[in-house]
Every structure is written in structure tokens, then in C-alpha cells.
Picture 1 (cartoon, rainbow, N blue to C red):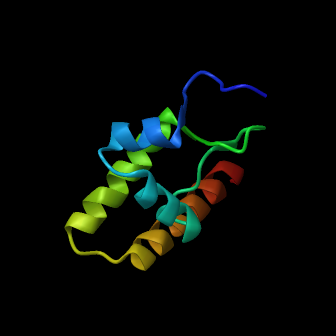
Picture 2: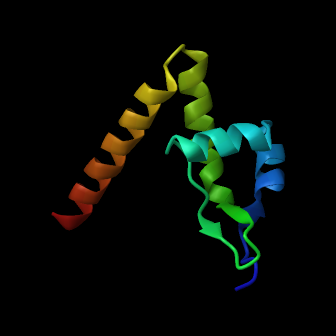
Length: 87
């Protein structure tokens, strides 16, 4: 499967977010921000809309929030969102 519209390579997404591929890799490794897709070529692709997730993480970081606290907060938000869709 090729790269779909709206998907960015790790490098392109890092540039969009003003960060490094290493930061994105770390966030992926700790379960904070996972790529939307892994291509047949082994490359990771991010959806352009994941920029908003990265921005939220950045805002939390600027307030001194730990990565673990951010991860828990985002997971709780996903659970609540899924719950509201099923009700």
C-alpha cells in the first residue's frame, strides 16, 4: 500500500511539528504518539491531523507535565471519547 493523502513520513511530520524524528520515535516507544500507519517499506507515517495531538503534548510539556502524566491523560480522553460514541 502506498502513501495516502494526508500521511507524512516521520521526517516530514517532525519538520511540521518543529521537532526531531528522535523525539517522535521516543513518543512512539513510550506509547504517547504512535504513527497512523506503517508502510510495506517499513516506514512510519503520521496523519497530518496528528499535529493537533503533538501540539497538545507540547503545551502539556511547557507546563512541566511529565510524559507519563500526558500519556495517561490522553488515554483517559480516548476512553471517554469511545464511551460517548457508544452511548
